[in-house]
Length: 127
Image (cartoon, rainbow, N blue to C red; front, side, top):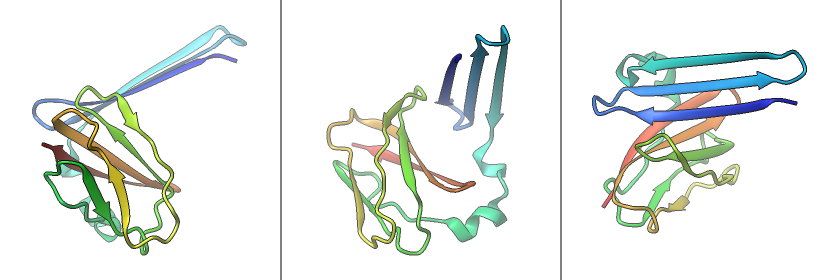
C-alpha cells in the first residue's frame, strides 16, 4: 500500500484550495494535484436543488439543519487552515439534525455535506 494526503484550505479571498497526493510503494509512483476553486462559480444551478439551510449562523455552539429531504450521508467540518476538525455520520432522514461546535475556537468553518457524488459546502461562523 502507499500513502495518501488531502488538504482543504480557505484563502482570505474565500476561494477554496484542495490539494491531494498519493504515493504507491508497489509501483514507485506518486501523484500530486492542487485545485483552486471560486465557490461563486461552481454551477449554482446544479447545486441549488441540493441547498441546505444551516442555522443559527453565526453560532456560539449548536448548529441545526434539516436532512429529511436531501438525505446527506455525512458532513465533514474544516477549519480555516483546511484541517478536518469533525466528521460525524448523519442520520438518514432526520429533520432536526444538529452539530455541536461549542468546543471550536472562534472563526470561520466549512461544512462539507456529501451524498453519493453530490457535495454541498456551507460556511459558518463560530463566535
